[in-house]
Length: 436
Picture (cartoon, rainbow, N blue to C red):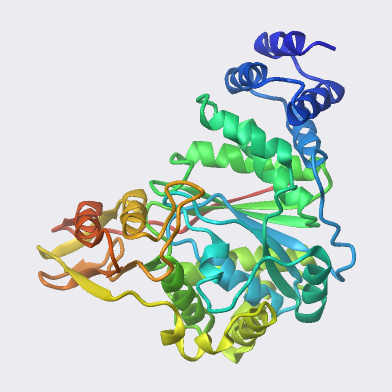
């Protein structure tokens, strides 16, 4: 078997066999296939695409390139959630304790932020003492004890995907739906999930800006999940404006706590209830969406979801008193209101630009090696459709040493105000399931 022949086969529109895909992934992982040949293959896939069978075979080949997490020691159906990323995406901090409080075991591996997209681990580490670096045995023990644990992603998980992603990033092949789908699904499958709920974002602040592309990606991932024996559901959600109000690590933790108290932003609450309902159904703790949603709403109203969050934080070394005393979270030295310069209605919020404004303050990383400031960020006071008067605050900037003036300028650039009233965008814009 020669690599050049397989590149040519895919270039000419042929279908690679499972054995051929495994040969390519194994060779690229061990270094026997060089970057320049894998670059050529990635470009051929970019233009020619992959069949559903090829996509599933590629996913499993990447799963098998490294270690996998065995969650069989955890009772119940383990349902994982993955978001394709966005601005102010605080869902895991709310969703994990919420579904765990109704009996859905959550054994989650999460990552750190890069660019304008935040990372769950960074957010959790803004809680004093919280640590996500625990071994697999302790991970499983915590889930069995408390129903919930969140740890950092293992360096040995899907090494082929890490190498291939880095190559795609510098060869103009990132936006290949088969390669994106297999990348995401390989990590979820290697992490040991029995079932997967995907939050596929679309809009300005999302990776997939256009609805058609987001729907295609969602369908592709659901199909892969079905083919490899994982029940998978994808929810298409709007990211034309930041989710919730807070953008920044400690600020998002505070917002998550408010949401678990039933006092959070409506859009964040709604998305968590929607995703959580699908997780509950896949886990078998509810027979349908209505029953699942009622269970989740009662968990918030009764305080059980908040108590689960406290126990989760405490079990992983964190100071759970931040739930009742949020002032114990890191706080910025400067808190600056950004007043509206005109009256009217908020017509649009450029989500990606707003995320970059928070990044200028130090809330995000330009590179994986960058240090972040857990205290800084932006809290929106107005969302699309809201009425605003001159002098009212559009947003609050939380700043320390850098970026305050430029962030304020970006806030103004990001928010368009019109005289006519504006309808807010729909949050959940579709659901893709295997039987759909």
